[in-house]
Image 1 (cartoon, rainbow over the protein chains, first blue to last red):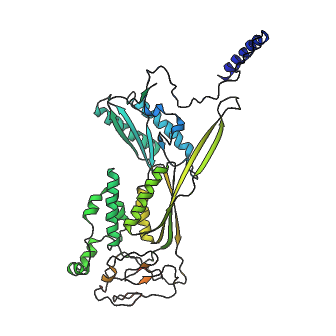
Image 2 (cartoon, chains in turn blue, purple):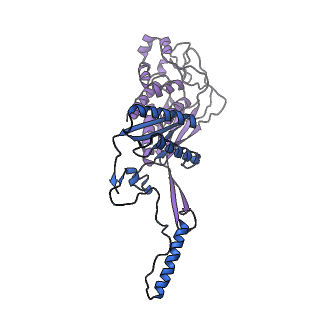
Image 3 (cartoon, rainbow over the protein chains, first blue to last red):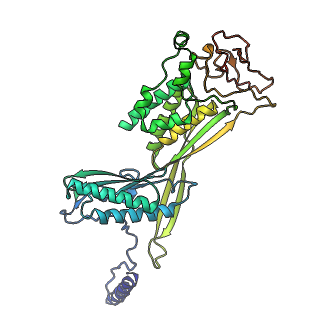
Length: 167
Length: 261
């Protein structure tokens, strides 16, 4: 990515030098556009893409208009274990995405209360309730054996994905 | 929220148990997590002199599950509970909950204040390779809240802390500092109140701010160190005032916790 940009800027600078010599004095920005933030943002487009509340607000709105998706104490001052919690969270999110494929309406919220790992998810009513119950039991059992701590899933179902706005 | 209502109800039950006359063992408090209804139903009836005479001491013994221990109960000058979290509003609501619990349990809440928040900033390179001029900054804010409770016994502190810790919200960490009240000399006659059949020790007393009244009604000053040895007689004599309590059962030990001990 960076090398292709550098090549493009070299080409641009060559073109600009030629233009300058031909009595054309317009300046072109030659540095790469790295000052734009791209993390967790959906750019404004045509207006036909549905976007949830979580996706609509950018990361600098966390704490002000958004809440936290993963709640634990390891990022507080004087506490440790942050890296382990992050790895666990990534695994849990991928696991939930794969087990309930196509059913997740929004991001999974992970809460840790003492020993207990609480996974909160909002699902679309794509499967039968009995299938949901089976998958919840399967997930809880597997994750509790894997992480050696009690795991509980709190699920809420919704008819279809809740759209906040169209971008 | 239902959990909130339930926890308020259980605080009231706990306060009834503490004031009214029986300090719960830790086992009784653990039951509250699962069976609040049974705790509610099984609480000891309001005890007054007339009731005790009717019921008799032995039936009260069978009602209460606590055991009499002769170990001295720890006395704390100050119990400092410091909570930290990322969200200030969560700490606000927890402070309200903890101070309400302390007030309902009759503990003297000295002060609840907010120490300065701590911000940890990280400045990292935005790009994986080169572009040193373009960086990204991250910030982690830790808010704190401290609740100080003064002049509390070990048993009360244990009950209060267990209740508070069971209801700690996710993402909130707690640090507890206990300052013991220093005792001069080797007197060991402060017994823990687990079961008291002394009628004069029973009734609820008004809590005053600076000095605390012990159960016998004598005023005790918490700042004085131990100077004299109290003996506890089985004949129903109050150790401090040496008044005789005629309705005291000879078998039981009439104990009062004073600041002097």
